[in-house]
Length: 439
Ligand code: COA
Image (cartoon, rainbow, N blue to C red; front, side):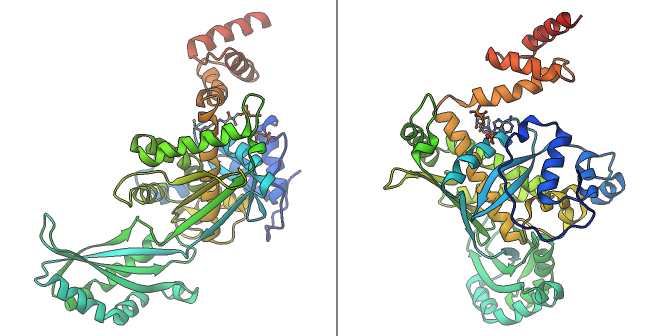
């Protein structure tokens, strides 16, 4: 069954799609497409690669083709009482499974709860050759209204949508390797845009005025990816009974997750991997929706080091009732309009699957998925180890590398996973055996 060609406002969905994993890709697309009312055109985008060459040629330079990644859908997510299906474009096995698994556990206690600041970005204007940097700062701040007005002349559409430059800050660096510097920040509400182009244009527009006021020379005029005013937060609470498995008590698993996080808080070697695990959940949404994953990564890691020491982006605690409580708070500069988000047909269709109505909602969903992913990795690490689940799913990759095709892939993968021996040479042996039996 396929949907009709007309989209429409999303009604409530149920993200608990049992057995999705056991369907073929085409049947999964149909099931997801039916739930979120994808049109035939939108379904074809996923079935057929998604990006026409003519569009690709307009996006970057010297285009020779397109590059594909798998796109999967994480199930079971409830965020602020509403169910979401999560499109994830990623090359790594076990990411979609782990996010879906933890979301399944979380939904027993109501799922994830999120909040966020407004969509506020910063642009920086670097001023050099200022004899009196502090005097220049005072003069610039005195002209705050005029500078904001000059910035806002540039984007009538943004102003009509309720956005625009809201404020300025002036930072002085008394000494750098290139002498003293004054840096003016434009604080801009970019609404549903990621905002890079918007704030860059504003920074360039106000530069001559800032030169006149400061008596200096403006050089750089560009956004900061340290989006510390555009923060999204997620929280999850899971009863320890929910975590229980045949091998481990729920309390033991909850404690293990808290202990794992404790190491990430004090040790940058662990924090880098811990935060990478969080980004395993976030980047695939950023990519699937055509957003700038380098900007998100830059913002995440500078935020993780804002105290002067690189640390965990998330926290895990056990509350007074013995429940596991996880939180994640970080910059999330995502857009719904502009750039590839608007032009890439697969990004449009991925946004349709998500059913988000604002960039802020998208940012909150992304952080909730990051927290779920973090919980999945920590749960595995604190119990059976990361390799069991990861390698059993990676086994399908290895089977393909060994030359398996069609139904051979699952057969070879199952044999490798059962023996806990996921290697290409072993996969080749198994494949030979399967083929010999067929003859
Ligand atoms: N496809 C899709 N979802 C899957 C899946 C698959 N192949 N395997 C597991 N899941 C999800 C599903 O949500 C499933 O519940 P549901 O089907 O009722 O919705 C849930 O996980 C539990 O399934 P189960 O078969 O009991 O999983 P498991 O106990 O064997 O765990 C992993 C498998 C991969 C989910 C688990 O080992 C894990 O989370 N590992 C950590 C992986 C990770 O962090 N990877 C990233 C860094 S390496």
